[in-house]
Length: 189
DNA sequence: GACCAGATTGTCT
DNA sequence: GACAATCTGGTCA
Image (tube, rainbow, N blue to C red):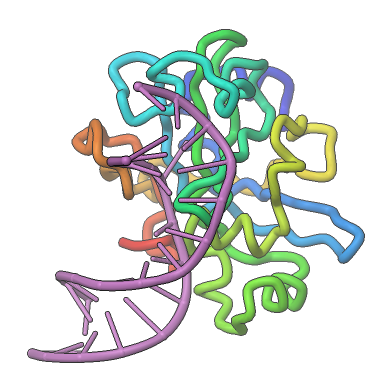
């Protein structure tokens, strides 16, 4: 992404990531997809954010420099992928919730054991599985590692739908979820 | 489509 | 010891 991209406001980054591609290169091949759904997690007034209760071993990279991957384990079996935002020491991130599959679709289908392309990356744990992301990528620099975000297209404001976030029990009323209007690849309408 | 049960374990209190 | 930024596969409509 362009210099300074990750220095912007977290909600602004969450919107601008829509339309860009997330790519992962592994020995098995390259897989990528266009980002169509994101959620912002903030440091102030947002108890749903992992950083809300201070720094721990798990959320350490959230407090590091922006533009890096924050990968964590949940529900006993899933990994979720976030982009760290905000200056070092603050603790904010953008959860990537869904992709429109682009490259390496056969490999994604094999990893996910499904051939339905709309279900391949339509959820935060699904896209992580499809791209082969694990805790190994925690802390990876998204501009220079095998796991990277590259500019593709710009989604205009009229094409972005803003709603409340999914799967959380706190701060459920905050409008911090964004997705591309009409996309069949989002986790849910 | 809506709703629901069950899977399964790292992390923090 | 409780919980979790989820998914799948089942039921019913």
